[in-house]
Image 1: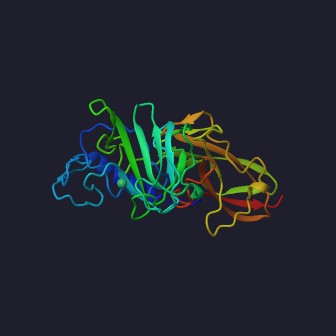
Image 2: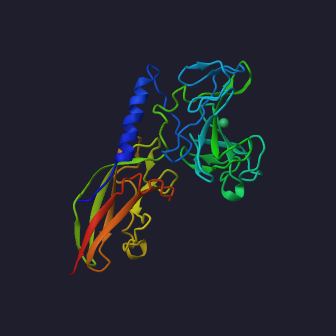
Image 3: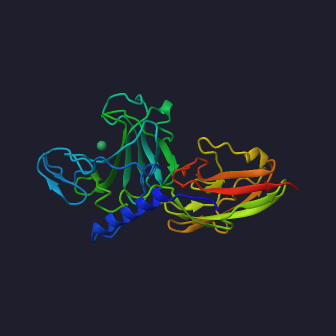
Length: 333
Ligand SMILES: [Zn+2]
């Protein structure tokens, strides 16, 4: 039997579901994704929905009149949502849109105001801002003004430029105010732009089943087919094309694991043919990935680790996928 551990994803999901239910009656909109890929990142401070000095109204409706910072909730007159993350972590667009402004001239930890940032205009009339990014040299800005981006597409990397006392992303959502005739900050949490807390990361997956959960016995030099199904637990559709958003399953070497099934020895067979049978898998849908296992190494037992990829990057790492692998025994011809 192949062993898989889903403890992290499952425990977190149940906890999040319980919190979402207890939040009550507001119907979720859920049309944005969280602007990063790491599901362990959580908010430090949200939007203060009361702009008065020394009065803070957080996304749950709780009010303080002390002007103090309340970790996990809000600090006075904060216009965005802060997500602490290590320097140079991937930052993703929260929704499809067009880049309308960038600043990349600061150093990764150079002090200033907003520091390096990206601003995206969305078709729903809203804008999103991503502040305190790393320097351009550090990959802080990977899109230019005028670029079209898709939700979940990487737009840069986190830093601590601008008004920053520790590496974090300040994510801000703006909506047009007809009275002020200007874009004004709104609270994506209060509006339930994410229906689970802390929301969905763009790409995430949970194992469902596979064609053979036991050991695949393959004659040396022979090739067999094997499929595995994953549920799309992220906020973005998987697409089975070479375009942005594509998702594939490929062999991968987690730390300390040396694979003998390398791509060079698996010509045209080491990578699943994207998502099978359909052009896209929406959130909560199940995608089937079929790949071929070619027994090119010498006879013996192998533990072949697989990993889901999006944009050619390993967003679903070994720990998050729970260590999915296919046990293989290569037998002599
Ligand atoms: Zn902030």
